[in-house]
Length: 112
Image 1 (cartoon, rainbow, N blue to C red):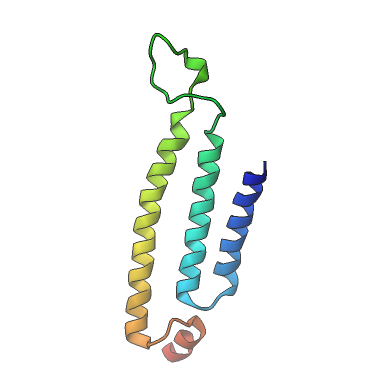
Image 2 (image 1 turned 90 degrees about the horizontal axis):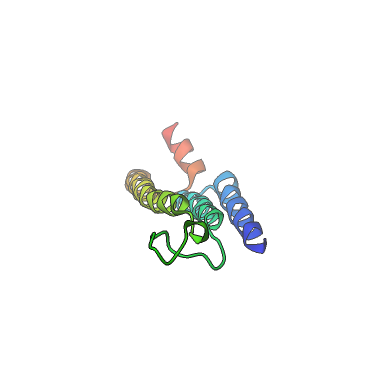
């Protein structure tokens, strides 16, 4: 139960960083925190204490297996999160090259 609270807290910290911070890098870190919290939540949904890997044999019955769907979703989400984070960092670096700052307020003033 406490790990679910940790997931919610991690999500809220990421949301706080996105909403309140003006630095692009801190906003990207906030997005990453939200992605990690959702991945952790999906992994927890599929977790069962004492369960086995979903490999069907004659020895093990199917009722004691871990659900493989959340695991597959988390692996896919990790790859997508890596790609989106890389794109966000590339855009942030291009903005820095052009405006010489990561501060959103200064970028809006320079754009005019």
